[in-house]
Amino acid sequence: MKISTKGRYGLRILIDLAMHDPAKPRMLRDIARSQQISEKYISRLVIDLRRAKLIRSVRGVNGGFHLAKLPEEITLLEVLETMEGPISVVECVRAPEKCSRQELCPARTIWTRLNDGIRELTAKITLDDILTPTGSTTPISASATTAFEPRPRHPLLPFPSRGGKMTGNVLYYKIYIVPRHRAGLLSL
Image 1 (cartoon, rainbow, N blue to C red):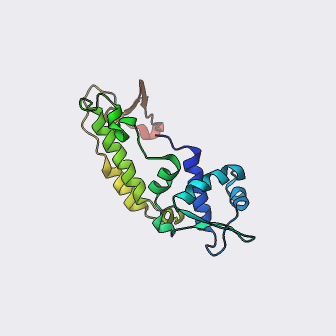
Image 2: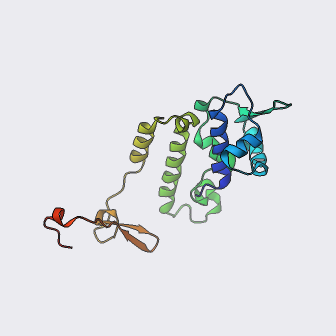
Image 3: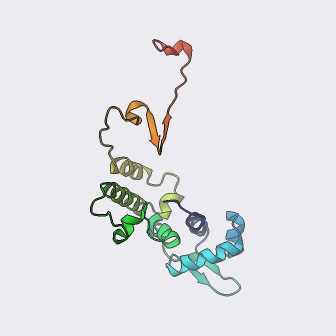
């Protein structure tokens, strides 16, 4: 799953609207200028945000856009699904009927758990959390660390338990540079 510019810019538009006076509608050109996004592109994105009832438009000379809900009522999940469509790390999680191996696939369980974890986490993050510097980072980070507990690995597999990280067919190792006077028994 990769979040496109639609998802990122949609969130930035909502952040911009939330940061300004809700009594005064914000014009597209002002949002475009402050967020450094083309006005033409923003005009296409606000259509989806308005259809999802996340923003409202006001017509007239003093018209523009403002949030349709309070920032604490708008979740990151709602924004991402409005702009990107349903969240799915792999196709078989969202549409199992498209996969002929769904009944036999042991990996489908982990993809489903990962997908559910992402949905659960993004549903907990509100626009207000993003705007508030202190936000609710403690509950978010706590739920993120407890959502997926790693299973014990086979001792021969190169994975974090052996000091490395496997990505595809590439093995990455963290290298720590220790000053000689602190190295103690380490020989470099």
